[in-house]
Image (tube, rainbow, N blue to C red; front, side, top):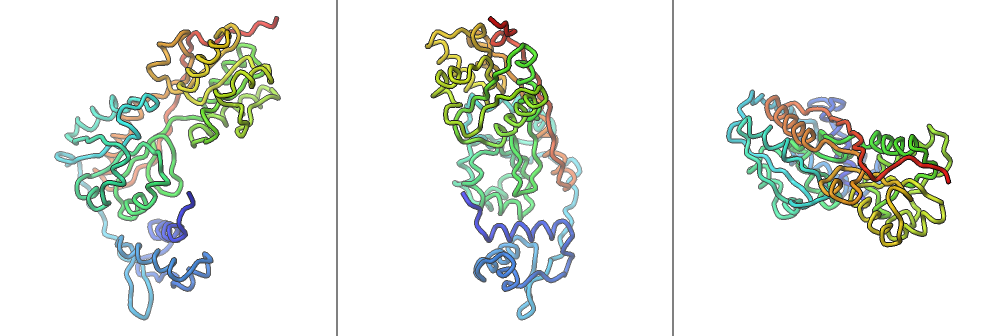
Length: 351
C-alpha cells in the first residue's frame, strides 16, 4: 500500500518542526510552494497543512501564511504513574508465533501502578484517535498491518502520543522501538551449520512476503555465507524456497542444512521431510527462530535462535515509564539473541 502524498508532506514538515529546523514563528512554505516541491495538487498540500494545524504544530494567519506554533513544554510527571492506563496491542491475543512479552511487561508496569489492557490490532479501526488518547496514557504496539493503520499512526504521532513499537522499526515515524537483533540471529544460526560442516545451506521462507524481521535474518544468513566463502545461497524471490516445494528444492540444490525464517516454518518443514522419509538431523539439519514453546516439544527438539521476549517486554515497559515520567521520547533498544542448541542439527559427515 502506497503512503498518501499528503502524509509524506505532513511527516516531512513535522520532522522539521520537532527537530528545530523550522523555528517557532518561522513561516512554512505556502500551499503552492509545497505543491511545486512535491509535484502534487494544491488540495494535497492544503490537507497536510490543515492536519498540522489540527495537531497544534502550526498556526495560520489570513493573507500571510502558516507559521510554527510555540510548542508547549510537557511538564514531567515525575513518577506519578498511579492510575495511568496503557494499551498493549497484539495481532492475536493467543498467537503461538508471537512471543510471551507479558512476563516482562506486566510486572514492570504493575510495579509503578500502571494498569495494562490487552487487545488486538482491531482497536485501531474500532476506536477514534481521540477515544484512544482520552482513555489511555500510552500504547505498546506489536507492529503488524501497519499499512492498514497509517492514518491512525500519523495522527497519534502528530499529537506526540507515547507509542512504543515492538518487533520492527517503523521508519515513517519516530516511535521508539524495542526489537531483537535479527541480523545477528541469522548469522548465528548459519554459522552453527557452517561449523558443523554444511556447505549447501538454504534459507527457507514461510511465503514470498518478507517482513522486516525476516529480511534482517536473511541478511545475517548472507553475511555468514560470504564470510565463510560459500557460494550457494537462497534467493529471496525463489518460489521453491518455501515448505510447499521443499522436497524439490533440497533435491535440486543438494541441501544439507536449512535456516528457517521462524520456528513454525521449521516445524512444518520437519513434518514434510518426515512424510518423505527424510531423517532430521541425519539427512538434513534444521534451525528455527523464536524459540516458541513448541520448538522443544517436536521430535527431534528444534535448534533455534531465542529472542528474549521477557526482556523485550520489560524494556518496553521501562521505556514507556521513562517517557511518561519525563515527557522525553526515549531511544530505540536492540536486544541480543542467542542460539539454543537442541537435536535438529548434527555435524555433517561426507559420505
